[in-house]
Length: 118
Length: 183
Image (cartoon, rainbow over all chains, first blue to last red; front, side):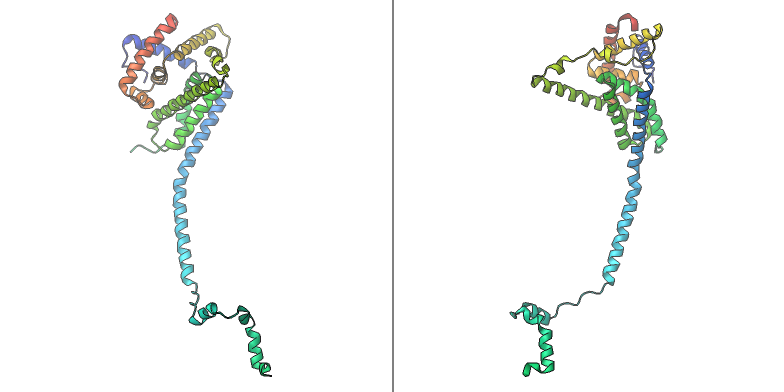
């Protein structure tokens, strides 16, 4: 690693002296060491956090599939509404005053009791 | 296929490179807090993007990230100084402080031998600051970090031949600027 084989003898000796000098200057105070340790812990945690979604992705896919199957079952088992008949459509589209249909029960009662003919 | 890397591997790798990375960033920024931010950012980027890659790939990747982050920081600082200059505030141009004065005392002791060692280190760091950026990066990665020529080239995004050329010129300049004390 520090052989510096690509250098000639003179440069290699210089490189090794400079490297030794720089390595000797790497001592850090405790506060800075603590900050570095904290940064390192955050990075290691971040690596774990980015690995987690791979497993979470499988769980999410499984959940979505199960939800889709459940929704299909519920739809198939629910009774479908009866299609509107021609009579119903005629009631909705004719020109009769809507209040007539609201009072239909009263007209029926009048017809049954004969009051309408009185 | 290389074995999958674990959190313990990543922790051990980062613990092994963090001090030197901080010193290099500090040398480039002349500011410990800025240097800490850069190193922390490089650690996070490595962990998020390459944490699951084989540990053998981490050295070149980490130093590539750090080199790029330092270059980005230097570009942003240069742009900031220009903007201040255009706005008529020349204080930013005038605040170039003595880089040696900003460097932390690496020894933290007043022993005569240690003081001499600290002075030598400061002198060497001053000489490094005078190098062109590419030569300094090459020297830091190949000599200080001890990366192989190939990993240095990968970290810098250049060829192995360029690494050798930059390194040869860097050593020549350092020999001339540090005098007999270090050579």
